[in-house]
Image 1 (cartoon, one colour):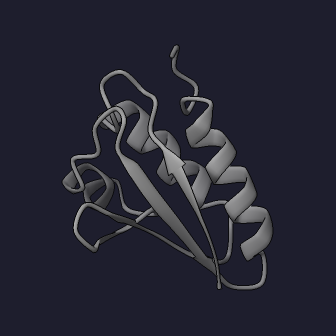
Image 2 (cartoon, helix red, strand yellow):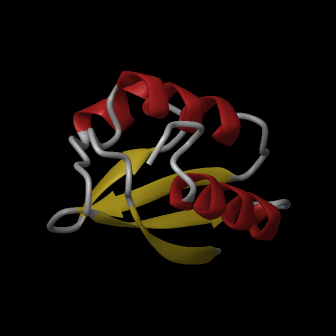
Image 3 (cartoon, helix red, strand yellow):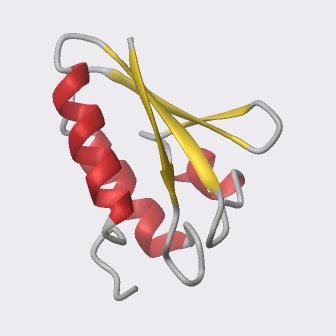
Length: 90
């Protein structure tokens, strides 16, 4: 298992569009991908409802956890994607 912290920079946080992008990207990997937010809560990065339910806002720090055969690649790709705004203007 590998993990990495990243701060969400999207002005509106992880609303529907970036949440959908994150889930679509996470689904490309075989690894189990979750993230911790707030006071120890966990969300499944492959579930749009789980990501939306996390209510992650701009400036919130989340910790991504990847476990599986492509965990290193998944973590690097997803942390970079979140850092750069998941395809949205920052």
